[in-house]
Amino acid sequence: MKQAGHGNEVPWHQDTSYWGQEKRMTCWLAIDDATPENGCMRMIPGSHRKGQLKFTPTRFEGVGQDLLRADEVNEDTQVYVPVRAGCASFHHPLTLHASSPNRSGKSRRALAITYLAGA
Ligand SMILES: O=C(O)CCC(=O)C(=O)O
Image 1 (cartoon, rainbow, N blue to C red):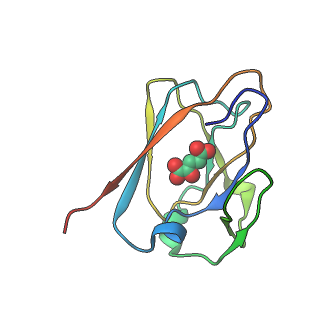
Image 2: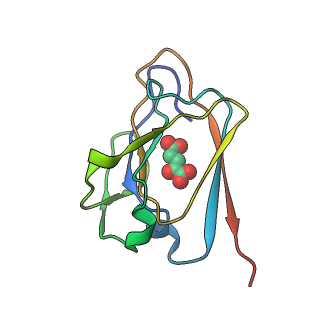
C-alpha cells in the first residue's frame, strides 16, 4: 500500500531472505495502476540464478520492523515493472526486487499472494 505522495521505500531484497529456501512464488496483483511515478516494483533480471545473496536487517523510518536489505546490488540492469490495475506480475523468490516511495498524486495499492509448493 503506497498512498499518494506517501509510502515507504522497499529496499532491494530477495523474498528468500525472509522465508528461507522454501519453494514459493509471489503473485503481485495491482489494485491501482502501478507506474514508475507511484512506486511500481523494480527488478534485476536473472538475479534468481545467483542464489541467496548477503543481506542486512535495516531500520526504516515509519516501519515497525527491520527490513532485509541486500548488501550489494548493481542497479545498472534494473527494470521497472509497471502493472495495470487488475493485472498481476509473478516473481521467483530469489529475484532481487525493490520499490521507491510514491511521490505522485496517485495511490499504488496492490495485493501480494504467496504460493507455497506442496510437499
Ligand atoms: O509492493 C512492493 O512495493 C514490494 C512487494 C514485494 O516486495 C513483494 O511482493 O515481494
